[in-house]
Length: 319
Image (cartoon, rainbow, N blue to C red; front, side):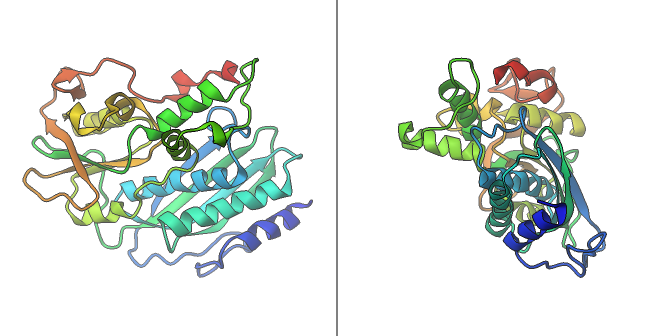
């Protein structure tokens, strides 16, 4: 099919544009009453970021949207628009593309009502690649940066921790063939807990609506937990010139997965000592003066593997 025909099928699966000028021109024109725009982008590449043997078109569209929506929320902003660039092998089925578009729409409707796809690009590539830019409005609030954590602040999270990491481990442990290549997932073989972990990996459900809530409640620092709690908390600590002290007993029964698992897209935030945490956030530790390590767990420097780093952890030989 031609680019124009593919685009028309994608647009048919998306809701009507909410922009002043939506898809169809060289660029969209968006209203930003606040006068400021929060912008972020993320790229998902077949291989290091997803595998088609494990991921449906719908799930890929959903995940491509929410990983960006969560970053907007982490700034304290409300997502308003997505721009989606899709590079596909020539043999990609139109049904897969339509499922992808449906996943984009469902993700926006579910976690960021009012946000829609307002433009993008299509091209051909040997490797299926999705690049999404998300835009958001601060709605009159100052942005919440990762550099604002202060000694004495309460460290809190909203959303799940560890489930997506367990889901990824499940895929690699159970759903590869004798040569190690990914194979189709047998959902009937999964327990309820395993199915929930798999869903958290393939179709994460971040607390996007709580980003602006945290900002309004006075969050001093905030960020999206995409690469693992320890790794992302260390980034916040480095940016703020402090250390983050986490209590493992606040992380549930599987503290290890909560500390090092990635891709849950929870919100990590700090709030002034004595302030009331907004609904949906739970305390997991405190901000302390800079110690020998940016992250302490139960009072000791964390020295294990802290999370996902594609430059160090991606192994092309894993299928």
